[in-house]
Length: 185
Image (cartoon, rainbow, N blue to C red; front, side, top):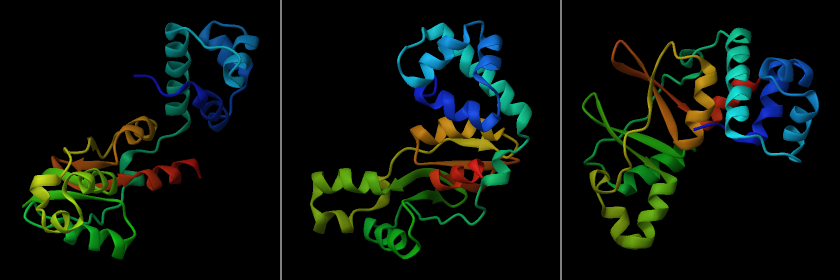
């Protein structure tokens, strides 16, 4: 799956290349890149794929940052036997929107604000607070290696609440959407 077309300009500017350079690498005209970036034209799938491949390659060359550079090593964890009330309380106290669920050292799921809101409609507030996380948690978030290039993280975080980071098969950190904003600095 490709990133959103409207992200082309932002990525190109972040890397610091001109429309002319991107057009040359992609094999299209500078005018075409301009029209795509301004929303006046939609590229074919093949053209979009070439654009994103070139941007990704250039981004990789311009940045040697990895997932390990952006992850928070202080992972707030809950157990499957905790209640949703426990999760809501912890999220509120720490101003966070998701918490990984671990059974000992094994990741088994994720609880998020979105997930809680979905279950609220099904169960009602009183029942929801008593519900165990094992009955209401979402699936395991993506897990990437500590050395995964940073440019891979942004598309991943768009489709999940967080990304867990592992080193030598052990979860050592978490990356949330707000952590990916650090990459823009």
